[in-house]
Amino acid sequence: MLDQAGLHRRALFFRQIREFFFQGDFLEVDTPQRQPVAIPESAIELFVADGQYLQSSPELCMKRILARGSERIFQLCRCFRKGEVGRLHLEEFQLLEWYRRGSDYRQLMVDCEHLLAHLAGALAADGPSPSGLPPFAGITLQGPWPRLTVAEAFAAFSPLPLQQALAEDCFDQLLVEHVEPRLGMTVPTFLYEYPIALASLARKKPADPAVAERFELYIRGIELANGFSELTDPVEQRQRLDKEIERIHTEHGRRMVMPERFLADLGRLESAAGIALGADRLFMVAENYRSINEAVSFSPDDF
Amino acid sequence: MYNASDLRKGLKVQIDGSPYIVTDFEFSKPGKGQALYRCKMRNMISGNQLVKTYRSNDKFEKADLAERKMQFLYHQEDEFHFMDTDNYEQLFITRSQLGDNINFLIDNMEVEVLFFDGKAIDVSIPTFVNLEVIKADPWAKGDTSGNDTKPVTVQTGYEIQVPPFVEEGDRIQIDTRTGQYVTRVKE
View 1 (cartoon, rainbow over the protein chains, first blue to last red):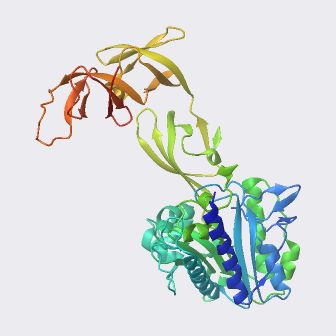
View 2: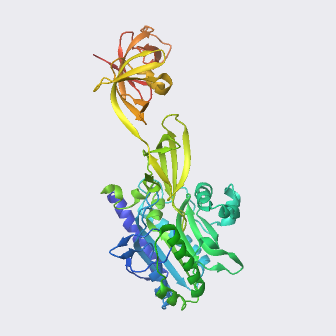
View 3: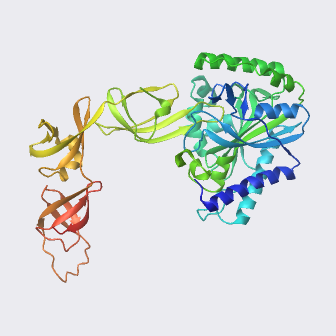
């Protein structure tokens, strides 16, 4: 739970996120938290409230808004993921998402560099973080930040190379135990170009279709954002979602439905890029807290 | 049965027939990836450490553990005898199972004995115990050697560093977690 000074800093943080996007000529949107359909993702367990899903991300609605003509949109909203509890996880958390029509993942990486510089400047102008250290203590935010492909990162830090990790179904474990702890320790780092199997909504890289134009941002070994060039081909998207629906059915015995109107709207979109950033986590890292529970107004420990 | 999502610090589970306590726990979930439950555990009998990462569909048996209040009676060679103060049932625990606790056990002390599968595996003793000093070098007033502490022996045979003013026949309080001197006790 935050004290009075912490609440003030958190409010400033959110105001400055909005300020940054207003300055970039983004439109703020708001979409329902409870939805009758969801994008099928086997790794995410959804809460169900009175027969509808609590959103795990606002992406479905935001991509439809984008497809219907918006150029640049952003949203700060509550999202819900069941069973995700830990030092870096809350089951209910604040997510920041932004989308750009006619753009790709490289532009989003640049956005990240500018957004964090803006926030660090605003927080520093208000004073040190509660620990007495400056915001993002020990991290150099001056861009451009290093970019490391997933294959390069595994070659450098993992005991098994990427292809073997995938074949032996231990990609996640090696990523968490060997790769992530080495990323972003002194300067924010982008991990990018994920194997296509690990990016169900991202576009294939034209020059190398084995990988997706997807990236994650890391600071101090903590994953902060996931962005990608959107897959806008409704046919390929339907095939990938079909696979995911099948997988969820086999693994969890749940039958999810195809988000048909999402696919229909996707067809109107030429190209686009979008990103989700964990706002509570970014605030935690910026203010040098040790756990996400310390960085929010109320945590599950406070009830 | 426990699920992986029940894992947390302090949870006691059974793995390959042995009781383990979770000593460190971290939930991880890489973006678009699966949930991972990373645990450090200690075998409650052997003390061995185990580091393991579990996935959400892993399941665990509960460790069949029970605690009983018992009184320490006496020891004979390496067997330390205890009695259940409710039903007068007696049993012994070996020196090696007791570990450092033997330094602080005195006759009639009340302890909590931990049982796994009906067998005694550990003893929790009070955090602070008062023991009598049975051997100490006298304090030479005006000693200028500059030593802050000196070794003494207490009634259990345990040797401990204490301030120079502690003398034979004094009672001292010891923190059993660290084995260190706390204060001299006036009784």
